[in-house]
Image 1 (spheres, helix red, strand yellow):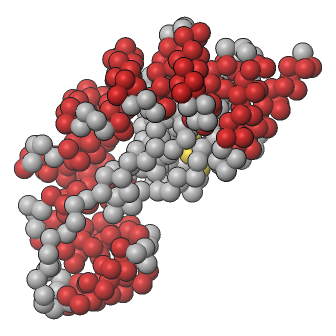
Image 2 (cartoon, helix red, strand yellow):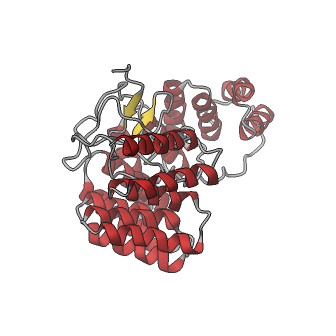
Image 3 (cartoon, rainbow, N blue to C red):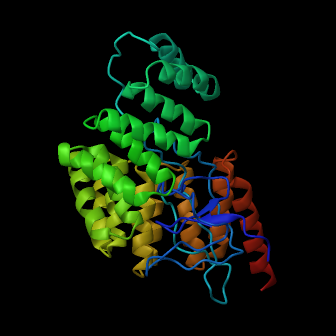
Length: 372
């Protein structure tokens, strides 16, 4: 048994590389999750895992307090063997969608005063990703005017970007203390608190924002993610319904809503959302594979495979669909077709982080089939 080189998300049970600070699937903090450890207080319906199982995932960077928007990658497949005699069949948790919190609104115009020039230069460097250089200038600005909440907020962002997370929380807390009515400061603080594992404090900050602005969609989405990670599915579902209703054309938000419905046991409701997305967007490949997964788990294997094949008719070069088809075919016992589909995926996406692994999987399946 090789040493544990993964961490399991406490929210969605996905496996993640040790260097990732946030879950590739749902954005949950992995700060306090030990290597190789199961998720704390796992959901009753969470799939079982094996310490030697392989996680085939793209190298997605961690969250930033500056926000990086919603991210959809080639569907992330967790090829985890089931605890049965047929260890070659992968677990059905396929094509998960990692989403990250939206960017915060830009800061309000700043009145010139002590520390203004240092702050502007530091903020410009931070915006260009030169956080180490920005840190000194922003520290100078705070030293010249520590009563300026915007100085404290942006300095906190720079500290976070350079890895000084506890200090970042202190600065963001100071910004909120100086201007408790500023939603952007509380949102930034809440995200930082989540990042250092202080979920209860983060929930308080988000709830303070919603008390002032009950229609703040970004806050509702973040708080729903936190509730979901804590296993409070009813409250997560209530908020996600509002988020989805306010963004009917936002595919990622609709998919997030569907995922919470699945966790709540409403697979039919989730399937309806995936079908609705597919009716609006012909190239919604990830929802199609997720719908196929629901069908497969309901015992409708043929229909699941047909659903993915239907998408491939219009988009034959879609790596997401090709990959989804391969996993379904393998689990359905159609080994020869699965081998061909895995190899086609590797051909379509040769630069994908898992292209080589899935090509090797095809070789293994073919070798196993020929020796049986």
